[in-house]
Length: 231
Image 1 (cartoon, rainbow, N blue to C red):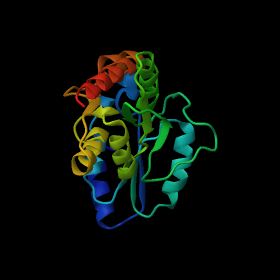
Image 2 (cartoon, rainbow, N blue to C red; image 1 turned 135 degrees about the horizontal axis):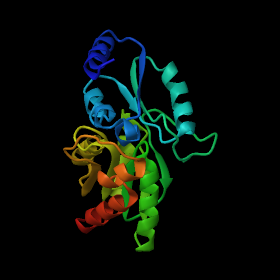
Image 3 (cartoon, one colour; image 1 turned 135 degrees about the vertical axis):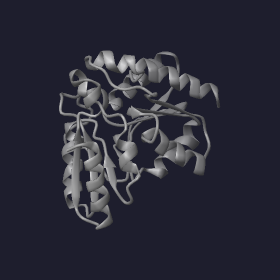
């Protein structure tokens, strides 16, 4: 199914309030050797514009299993952004997830790193790098991108005073924009957005692609220092 056809199906389904659960596999750099034609960086932006849709991006298999059980019971349209390749385990079995909420994976007081999907691992790596420089970073897994956890974003803005968003997606229309909208409306703090800037995909392994597009832990850590400097 083409992206255009899929979008039309979702609009029609949402308009009629149908129960449709769609999975978008291998988003962004997760597509690796399939290259730019199979490496969507714009799908969240498209889906976020559909009224009442729920969008989730699990960080690992435990999260995916738990969230999809909830999505099966949800009444309405849902979109799950899911990696088919092996991902690093982030959660222990039995971890809890709630649609419309995010999980704090690590507490911190100087900056909050808000990530989704494969970028959760990179945010945790960034927090370790920042700790070596005496910077305390909170890490949030924002696995539910729509509806987004406004309360957690506001609390993080108030308590840490700076935010970095981390997504395997274009900086336009995705997690970064969703978080920034809440910040601008509720409690303004510096926000730096880690994501893909005006580029298409290419062939490569995950490590190469993350570094090339600035999605790696080192890039996140650098963005955190930049955000902190703007306080």
